Length: 180
Image (cartoon, rainbow, N blue to C red; front, side, top):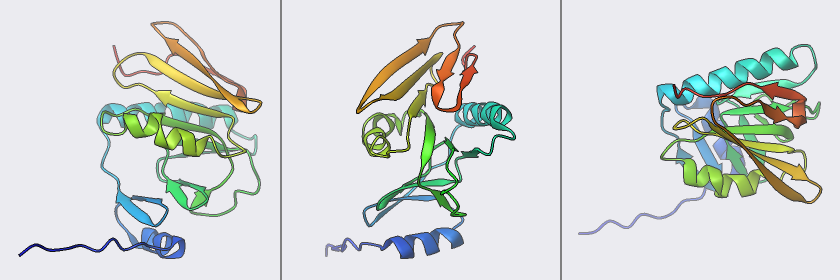
């Protein structure tokens, strides 16, 4: 006998309440809840290194930096980016932000396609977002999607010596990589 599963949609309020009680993180996309998997050592090292640099750079500025436990809300979608910076006083919710200026995703083999397409397009719909950054675990490479009026430009940094320009927070970062 086969079992038919009904696709049960969850409301935003149900998701947010369940997420407060959950020991695991879940992303939410228009009623659908998706469990997140753990990250590798390289992924964690890159995320923490970048967040630490940004936190030091923004210290005392009134702008906030968060790592992978802070959700970003885009309408009826909630994602957990690896690093996010908000420059808005409107972001007062304790569990998610809605007006990030900078979002960083560290690319993993299992998430790279979604980070490059689905998430990028959703994130870029945010009026507050100025830069979307993809950091490779496999090579010394950082891609910065930067808002330019109504379109987005891509700037790629790679190789042994480079400084990544993050205009959204007026920062320059030396190479970000775990690749030796």
